[in-house]
Amino acid sequence: MVEVEADFTAQTPEFRIIGLPDKALGEAVQRVRNASSNAGLDVPRRRLTVNLSPASLPKHGSGFDLSIAVATAAAGGALPAEAIRSTVHIGELGLDGRLRPVPGVLPSVYAAARAGFGRVVVPHANAAEAALVPDIEVRAAASLAEVAAMHGAEVEVPEVDAVEMPVSAPADADRLDLADVIGQDEAVDALVTAAAGGHHLMLSGPPGAGKTMLARRLPGILPLLREEEALEVAAIRSLAGEPITHLDPVVPFVAPHHSASPAALVGGGTRVARPGAIVRAHRGVLFLDETPEFQRVALDALRQPLESGRIEVHRAGFTASYPARFQLVLAMNPCPCGNYGVRGAECTCPPMAIRRYAGRLSGPLRDRIDIDLQVARVAASRATSGEASELTSALARVRVVAARDAAAERLRGTPWRVNGEVPGERLRVGALRLPVKVRAPLDRALERGTVTLRAYDRVLRVAWTIADLAGATTPGIDELGRALFLKKGLLA
Amino acid sequence: MAAKDELGRAGEERATQHLRSRGYAILDRNWRCEQGEIDIVAFRDDRLCIVEVKTRRSELYGHPFDAIDERKRRRLWRLAFAWAAAHPDAARRREIRLEAIGLVGADASTARLEHLVDIL
Image (tube, rainbow over the protein chains, first blue to last red):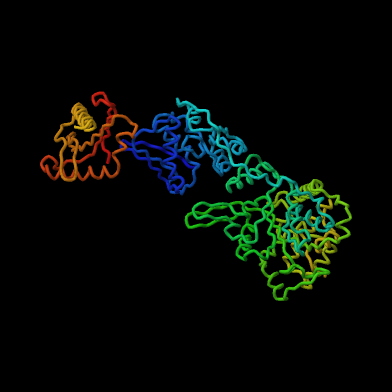
């Protein structure tokens, strides 16, 4: 919350804004002066000092224009100071006195509501976005004169066209359905498992096998966001500068290009922090296509949020902390040319290149991946047979929600909600430990050294999810075998 | 005398009356030196007041106070010290203060008068 104070002193005219404004905010001097006179609000010819408190925190952007203008009008006597005390004002001013929309309204209004303010005034184009926040009265205004009249000033309110937001392209108009995936029943099954357990997933396979197609359908089978989660997601999108008109209950899907820099993934900026791709994937899916092509530092930036669910952006002047709890989906080819191990195709990569390619993924990152799925090209006979997969996204989502409910029931009283979050020792020792008979193949693999203890835990987690999906109370030999299969190469 | 100078002169006359009625003792008017001119030097409450008078017919080209900017203020301070140096007896041990009087109106006797005490 930033408090805007305005005070006139009996000195020759001057208009100063203090409290570490940036360039855009410093220029508010001109906008406020012209907008006020065009709105019929008289600015006294004295020295005006506007202070933005807390004064030591750098402030940026044009969203303070309206509150500066209102505070100025109140200091000059055009508005009763009492009337504006419990109201938060957000908006940029045009020279003609019209209000222009600003980014980041949703989190601002959210913070105002939490700070106990009862009313917020926003530009017309931001009204729908601000109205998403409960427990606060939202007043939309088209011009400064309208705001002044609202607070009881005697000004003429001109009929103006409200400034509208630029219309953005409709996002993902065509819904992607799981039924579009043909002949990849294994992969679809693994995708549903990943969704049900919140497991991080790696898809590897030759080009054209459908890795991207599968990944894009993951949000469609994940449970819909609850209202407060959707609000969080919308707040992040608002901070990133996207116009928000309604709460989207479908989880976000963020697919940064593999040339993305660490700053683009994490978030950055010199004076202003902007959320990066990782943050925008909060509560949703972060899909890294062609994972080995990413810069290694960029990939390692994923480790902190994967560990803690938050990401910190540190700059010389500020630190920002964002929520970043996402489901990671990686996709990679088996080798740089993509044909290694593909039947009927010839790989032209030298062995060294293949090893280097696979080695780009650091061990700590691999350790987070619960499901490692090999996706093969679809055989021609199945692709052209015309029979559609019977599993639609809607059906899959019902199964996922049921499995998640079962897991949540079992994990009640713990900080975890899905199997993917449960630490390994909880599944190895204690109440959830599986009987020796079921564990036998896994224990043998551990003794032989073909799985590490970490991989052992991951197999257990996935086995529990498969059991939840099947409606079983505990995983049996079949579920464990299937989980082992999803960790490729173990039983080869 | 040009019309604008006449208006300015009439404005200064009005300002002088105003200051007298507020208990100022006028020490000097239109004092000139090589750096410029001081409109009014007055004395009140043991303070030496350097008063700049600005008269305008209307506010179409801005308020009179808008004309008193940072540069003008700095020059007024220089003039104030020049006056004090030239009149050591009157200025001794006295605090110096800059004041401004703005008048808006075609006729100085009826113009709207604003008085700023201590403009720094």
